[in-house]
Image: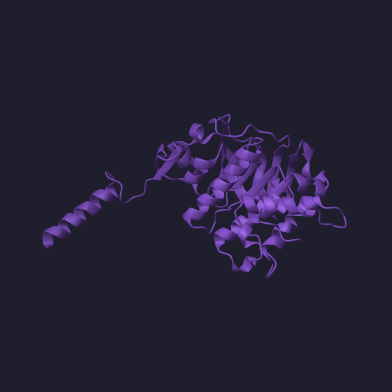
Length: 313
């Protein structure tokens, strides 16, 4: 290709579902595409992960899926991306069974960044991002000016244009993740699904990636669904939060409306205090362990031990 220029069972339990609020900073949703599921069952072999689940991604919003390990959040995302066949129920793209929709049509509407994407050995950044254009090209895959413009725009948006001729193998984790997001952007889809895009990144690069996704959502109206492990980052960046446990959705809605100490305990089995995030005023979960918490038995015992040790000296 030419080098770019630098120019669970959701029905077995009552679900807490709160309408997503607007902070006044989000873009007005412009997409007409919808993605959801009805009566969804998912599993691997004989192992059932998700049962009878209903879900809808709010169009034009930034949705984050959270929950403990093995709760089914990545499995759900794979099913929404048509990477996993349901054992029951249906995934609906624009109201139609996604598995009955032509592959090219799905790829032109829905972009996916899996948890651990693998690039061909020695491929350059420009060539890898260019592969994001394949769903938009004809049978003979002729490269057009529109393709070049889309690739350049994707690389500019993700700040990787200066890496055009670099091998993907040489990049840092943060650079590589931005390149993979550029691949998804080059598809020019209105829905983008990302499975743990901040995994293995240091905190500064995690924020870079989430800020980039927020820009895409607010400036282009891209519908986002992202699986994250960090509950506080999820609360800070999500318009709409989906909390899962044991293959079921226990709560969904705006983080400020659903994230409570009781929900954190129910989802993660964790005692906590929920306070306003000083940076964003969104909920911030402060975990309470057995140590370093004033007033707990472990803290009193530790203080007594320290005092005894001091007295012996």
